[in-house]
Amino acid sequence: MSDDTRTDSGDSRADADGGAASDTACGGRNGSGPSAGGSNPRYDRVRRHPTAGPHNSIFHWTDARHPLRVMVNYVVVLICRVCPSMRLKNWLLRRIGVTVGTGVAWGLESTPDVFWPDLITVEDHAIIGYDATVLCHEFLQDEYRTGKVVIGERAMVGAGAVVLPGVEIGAGAQVAANSLVAEDVPPGATVAGVPATVQDEE
Image (cartoon, rainbow, N blue to C red; front, side):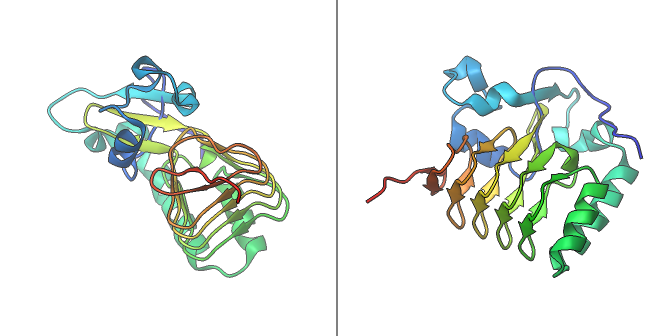
């Protein structure tokens, strides 16, 4: 199936599952990004797609992505969530567009973005923990946004963590369980919290 992003106006991308959280965590309703201070580089990598009409942007999801593509992605992700085989998971996720390196491990119930899995890159030997979520989209009131997510080589995303669109997690970095990753994580750093911040070494 061809990659099908039908709406492409503006300069960032996003998903309904994390929209409200990302606005709150990063400051600014409807994502003010660089224009609201420019302190978060992820906004430079996020594309905005304004939507018109009386309804919020979730009602426009069929204009954003072909429904059949989303259905196929959803079925594959559901299988991967319960599949114990790393090799099979990685093979299936590559089929729906995820860039998966060598030796990548996905914990049970981990969930890559269903709408735009092709915007995810997980580099060699990275770990995505149990019930972690990697989002490449946010549906907001007047727009949706999409952005690539890169998880670096030998990085670790802990159980229950949520990674927002446009985020880059550096090589060897660690994200603590149940964290909300709303900003880039430097290589080798450990982050924790909501939103996740770098933890000082003791």
